[in-house]
Every structure is written in C-alpha cells, then in structure tokens.
Length: 69
Image 1 (tube, one colour):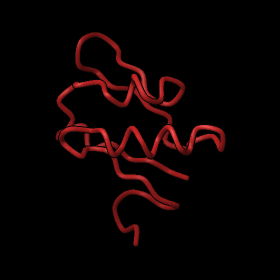
Image 2 (cartoon, rainbow, N blue to C red; image 1 turned 180 degrees about the vertical axis):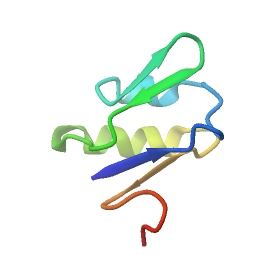
Image 3 (cartoon, helix red, strand yellow; image 1 turned 90 degrees about the vertical axis):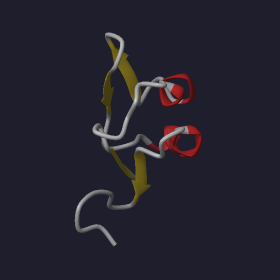
Image 4 (cartoon, one colour; image 1 turned 90 degrees about the horizontal axis):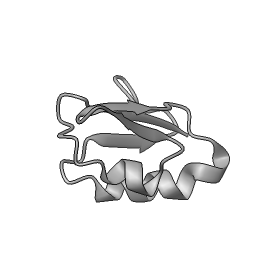
C-alpha cells in the first residue's frame, strides 16, 4: 500500500502521528514526515490515521498520487 500526504493541505494536527507513529512523524511543530510505502503490519493504523485527518490530507491506495486510478 502507498500513501501520499498533501502537505499544502496538512495543518499539523498530528492525528496521524498518534494513530500510526511508525509511519508518520512530526518534526518541529508542523513539519510532517512519512513513509510512502506502508509496511504490511501498519495498514490498519494508516487507514485509521487517514480517516482521522481533519483536513483529509492523506490519500491511501495501492497506487496513490497523481495519475493513480
């Protein structure tokens, strides 16, 4: 599974960091770092993190990003 985060939309609420800390990490107060290729054991956590994002900045899918179906 792949994820893409729209960093222009992300407001740094960090709900994703709390729900999937092995995939999402906050540097400083608003700089989000993430692992685009989600490890198999983190799939459910990442789905929950995407659903919890207040601004829906996280796109999750087999192929996420521009041109993805």
